[in-house]
Length: 423
Image (cartoon, rainbow, N blue to C red):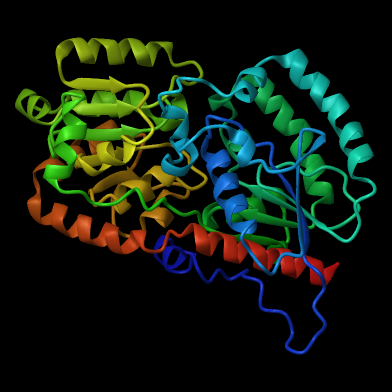
């Protein structure tokens, strides 16, 4: 499936479960949802879990809904987030909020002996707690499913631990390589967040096509176009002006390709860099010391601003105020910042690999993320070409209409019903 057909087909995937047979007795829909990803500050997977859980709680067609996290039952994982409005306003980049806190899970995942201990003890704890659950479907929004006496569903966000292990800490790769195959041996159905990852699952893992469904993600309504009069007060706090900068949002790490972005931007004429400095919004990632040194030099030279953390409500304004959004990642399972930027009414440059053309849906300028010269030329043209900019903004806003968390939840419930009927 090519990128254009995939983008048109987000709501009608070739593997989409059909409705249940008319007139047939409907089985009760009882769910157990793993809520371990709902740990503040929310990352991309945490955002997905939050949006899904919030909608599952409101659905009348679910007979029973229970939540399970790290070996224990949880009454209401959203109430227990204790994050105020943070979880309602932020995005995939929620970890960029003014809390400035890294997920404790992310920190612990880099400690090899602790990862090994959990790897050994976790399955036994889960088996003991879950063995008495009958007549339910278990869904993990975060890869791994435990031993469970019923049908199970895993959401697989990407296969970067297999395709690009060099972009992850060794302990994380070892854990994924040890635990993910166990999920693959027992899971009843798999959800992926893009057609691209679905195809990788089929090809790389030999997974049956009828047991994997691609369901795209959504964007929060706070990502929308905003006028200069609305933007100016928010942007002034950062020394920015509407339309007066380029933007990258994402963790500063190897997979996001920030070093090549810096090289491409630094090659722009001085006058252009003064007119439109590059703004980076992102947390510190793994093995990024050299990249941060380059960022410091660029800041000293005056053509770059690094906004590591943002107050919870400011990110949508930073998106809407940019002249150009640049996301030259090497690999993505989905690439939610692309959708957020298009929803905000700004033109986008992104990569022509993995899921990014699919998400862009023909509305962005695509580049080879490994070709600095091509990225440089694309930035140069995109900042100056007004005709392209108007076309890209209009196409992006049209494409952004396809990204709906409600649709994501609806299609996920259809998968629940499918595996319930098959069991």
